[in-house]
Length: 299
Image (tube, rainbow, N blue to C red; front, side, top):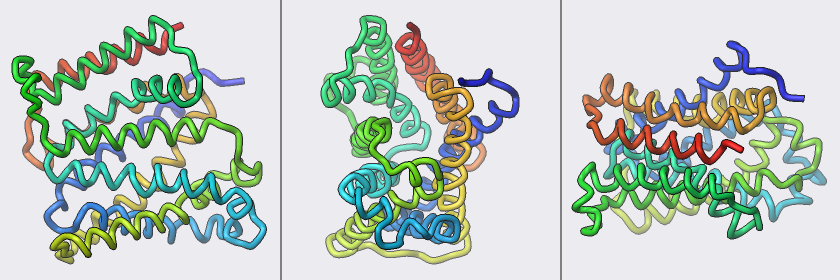
């Protein structure tokens, strides 16, 4: 039975969006220092080094990782190889606030993927909420000028974050299916490591292609090293752990509202660290996206 939302649980659920917002801002800060695919690869290498002492038994012959390798190869592609790589790629041309606001439409993608790919029914209330959230995303994409929406004034980063959101929606629906070995599913570090190992293979291939096809380079410095430590320890490991504990206590429905604090934190970080002031349309879009999510989640 799920518990009531307590201050301690609320604190747990505030940590992930705080770290995810920081991930977007840090990714923007170092976009001139390291290529996006390479940043994603290095992030998960760091996470692997953290997780190995906690759950190295997952790599032993005969463990559930190898008997269910097809599932973890796909989960690794969607959640490790693609999702954050596309977000970092988006931050090459878009702002952290734009990226996190568009990504806040994830529940809408969840409905669409569940309906198309997993046979889940969508109610009228959910459809109305989805339309409201989509309108909020459109407001961000047209930069607050509805008249130019038909001119499709999209920067590449907006497209990349939409693809990242679609990837995360498919990944999340796959996570919801009880197809994991119990010994892996019940251990957060083992569950994450089982995805990181094949995911790193995907991330490595994407980074290799990036270096082969583009003039990629890394400008090593202490700020870049600090950024790599942050994205590996914070968004990749700590956020996952806190989120899992919070969801176990109050369930995904209540927890999902906390995820949409990410754009607010991104706005604060952008002002403090990047000097990027939010516009009125960002606030309106946030209200529309969250309003749509609230409408969709009500029964």
